[in-house]
Image 1 (tube, rainbow, N blue to C red):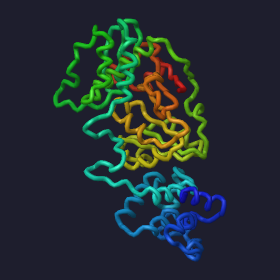
Image 2: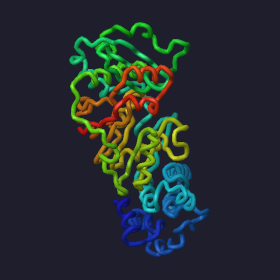
Image 3: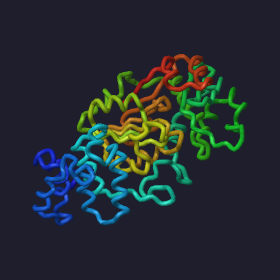
Image 4: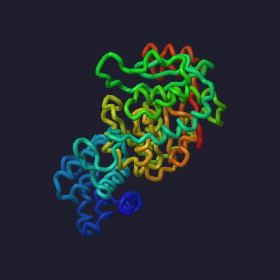
Length: 381
């Protein structure tokens, strides 16, 4: 495969980044040995304009201006720049990772966008018919186990939603932005307390309201806290995943502390994030992240995907990662809901002090303020 051939040329044959790309594609693109030899002058930031030699070589192999523009955008989004000196300063990718990325872009091509949506996988969850397979499996698993559990309190905060049962057990889930046309954001407000928990669980399968799914997921997490717990670990999830510098990690959602850990390891890291304010300058849009999900060896997916309705599509977009974790306080520690998927780890939370968590949620607090009152655990599937 050309991608592996490019890496081999750079690491084993000691060719520079531009030569490695040309060597990898010499048969397909009819590149002569003389042309490969001439590219010796294009390494180390010496290509036109100081552009990375790998990107420069990749651009040479394409004629269309639109495809070249798309390739530049993809490359810059992942490497932090298209210029060698800036790439080295930002340290988002190593030189060999730039070679790998350039070869991938040639091999897979650019994702084309029509009407703001990708022709390939639409990660942003904008399809009219939302797929909620995992949510419905979680609902089907928990509903018979809900028994006589009754809702004691519901708080829909700015950052999180919390549900407490009459037993004292509680669960949380991320609160999505409301698109309500008036000051009432949830039509069932004022009727939730005192209802059977199995009724609020039904909100998990609501195809129209992310806020409803948040209430349903928080209810599910409260019930999972009440029911017998499967064996879990409180070790750091990155340690459990045993990420190495050779891994290619695709992260959906920006997890700042974990990003810092992965940067120290030195693996390739592609961060796919909808919010432009999170990790500004080092994240990919969902459309640009399609290839990253398809080619990663480790996937870290946000538990909020169960709320915004993108979980099924994210799972469908994974290639063959050796590990895939659903991560975040919203994540339900329920292996049955993910049986048969590519998820290998569930990393979520259990509420330890319900009153304190409900107070933090009511006052607009988030993960950093709640963490004193919850236990972060992960389940290996």
